[in-house]
Length: 206
Figure 1 (tube, rainbow, N blue to C red):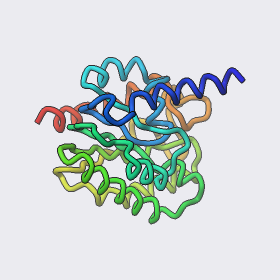
Figure 2 (figure 1 turned 90 degrees about the horizontal axis):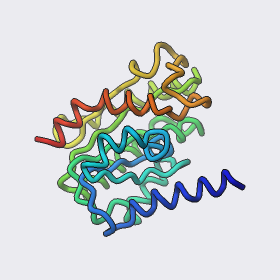
Figure 3 (figure 1 turned 45 degrees about the horizontal axis):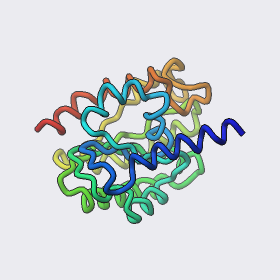
Figure 4 (figure 1 turned 135 degrees about the vertical axis):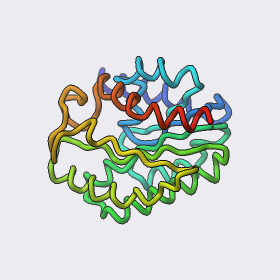
């Protein structure tokens, strides 16, 4: 019961930050639990790096790419005036054996919707980060090869941080992960922010 109340409270906090019209964030993070938990394990890093820029997090635990598409169509990013969007999505699709081509195509739809709804934004698309499962990790690598095509050098930039989180197939730096080897520890979010900083600053400040 306590876990349920904790989850409900967390989701309420995310929702309050994501209600259209409630806050016009210049930085918007979109994704599933690994994005949402910036406001949990990653909160100290978030508060240092993105909260001062009006950061908004609309990540939803458990989401697959199709749900993210539906949420954007339903208004999840409406009324934000984002300069930079950070998108990390697809892990749950791959764990559910969704074909990598479908995952890649859905990410393309998400990018198109973000461009249409946030015309000022430049988008950082994170290549899907590795996890401690060799079979899924290989599927992640295959999917990442496909989504690299979305980097146009201007509006969408793809960044692959696999080497910062992994030292081999199915092998991850455990200090960057929680015990499930899927979600990130505070140090994992610190490494994410550090590796993304150069590109983030380039897009935000230019």
